[in-house]
Image (cartoon, rainbow over all chains, first blue to last red; front, side, top):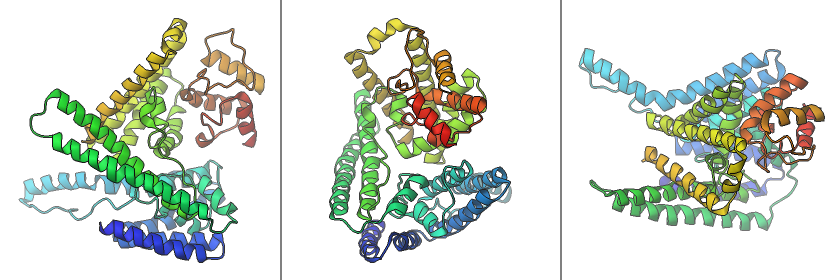
Length: 381
Length: 76
């Protein structure tokens, strides 16, 4: 509740100042710094990390762009960010391990890292900065100044729950902005926020209430199926609602943030599902994990089985430190592999076309994909 | 470049020799090739034309036709 109050008051104050500033450059600098202050107020540790990480990323972006050893600087800069993310994600595990060792040898009950929790928004900003550094390395974009970098990485409307937009898209907007405040920003922004709040606070929260009221000690199979179905709807509406709010509040500042969902539960296969669920993350995994892994070998088994399973395993690990998230990711990776094998089989057996292109088969495929995804949410419960 | 790309796509991804492929044929949106194939296409372009196309530039939308592929290849 404190965070919500802080967010709303910050949003109002930032909007007023932002639109009174004379040009986009000063607005970008202001919103970057204001976002940093917001994060510091919300979570002091996260704020400090954001400040250090931004300086770190800026420093390496200069090196990557200007040095002859681009590859070296790119690899160590990305490794540093991954280590930082892994440290905060897995410190709980490390603590449990140290606790059990010290408990055994020293009879100590003290936890070494008890107070260190995952800082807010760290998963998002680290992935943004990795993509920024990699895109400079690949020649997609050039380095920017530190304020624009801070604006991109820490923008407070998208800091807590994404999307993980790309620097190239954001920079294109703030560079070409020559317009001043327009009433359309308000209509579009508030409309999107209202949709998001309805999804989150009405559909997701009420569904969540129903799911929790059913769950108990000894549920029948039917009750468990209903619970899982409800949880599937709850998760989607919750996350899509947050994304709508992030997109809507950003629109109030005149920004167009990328879409993160595109009716994922209506897709007829798992590949299309992942192109419409948490789009910014699945695009990120595709570009920075899947493709580089795919280039390691042209072996069909590697491409069809190992690359999807490893990529989605990493995607799962991004969601949380517990093993169940990695398993959930690999479950989806296995689903993608099976879908690829099925596509190859379909291609080789032309007679299948008459069946797979019918309406009823498509409906069946949508239901099967939904059931596969919904079953996978067990790992999230 | 156009002929080489069409020839590669035909031998690697298509099983139907009777299909007419031009530089404007929709390949991914029509389901002729899937987006997973883009990884091997990226490797082929690098090997054959010496152009390293970054993954964010190779999407189902931007690589849907051979004409689009050539346009992107020429940017790098």
